[in-house]
Amino acid sequence: MSIIVNPINADFAAEISGLNIGQAADDATRNEVVAALDRYAVVVIRGEPVSEQAQIDFALNFGPLDTINGVLTTDIKRRVRAELTDISNMDEDSEILDLSDRRRLFNLGNQLWHTDSSFKRIAAMYSMLHAHSVAPERGETQVCDLRAAYDALDDEMKTRIEDMISVHSIFTSRAVLGFEAFSEEERRALPPIRRPVVRVHPGSGRKSLFLASHAGDILGRPTAEARLLIRELMEHAAQPEFVYTHKWRVGDLLVWDNRCTMHRARPFDEARYQRDMRRATVMEAQAGEVHSAA
Image (cartoon, rainbow, N blue to C red; front, side, top):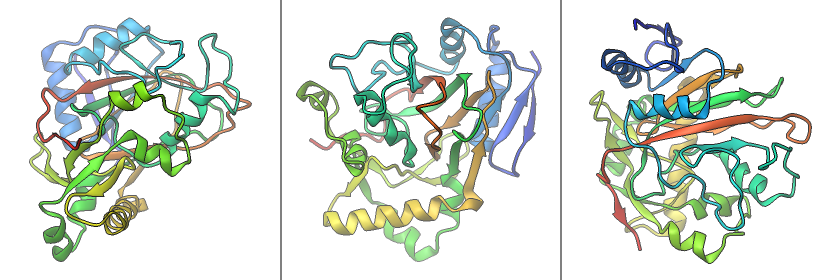
């Protein structure tokens, strides 16, 4: 299978053509996709919606999948396979969620800039989000380039943050929105995790920031000072020159590298339109730069 990589920007975001995610991919094709991700950090593959099994099979070419799909587990009925994360506004009967539904309120956190699974012991490598239905207006996904954002920092800031360790928790990002309706079981399952603020991307060798709305503290710094610095870095990284905005079509597979990007969902009329997205999350091979903060 021969693919063509068409850059959207010089070094960030590209469209891949000649690839059908519903068909088996050989090692050469896999390596071409990985090379494109190492260069561009986010790629879009156009096509038609595929089955859950086909999406899972495609994602498994790139590594092990997340085994904890869905932070909310208490009294929740799944709509999609356990290997996938349901990024939709629908319940298990494929009806639009009530605006006050606990699942919908939790999912509002996806509109904050974040990195998938940075709050888990093993973090996400690639996120592969597949569109089965999209809102006819709005509802874009934005991805920002944390490599370019790091490069654009002045030398003083680079030196200041070089060895900093931040603390990530899903409960930090949701608390920003006032959502704290977690069971004790859900809280125990995801203790805080430590992550470096700066890391070297293994595929490209480029230094990158590692940020997310899940980050709420920096080791050795007062919480107020830490949160101001995290906010400053995130605002810097989210400047338009570092951001790719993806306008969805049914059948799209959007893939981004969580090791060097942040992303966020943009709002749409959730009471009017169904949005059916299913994410396969390829995890890093091992815990790596991870330390329990408990």
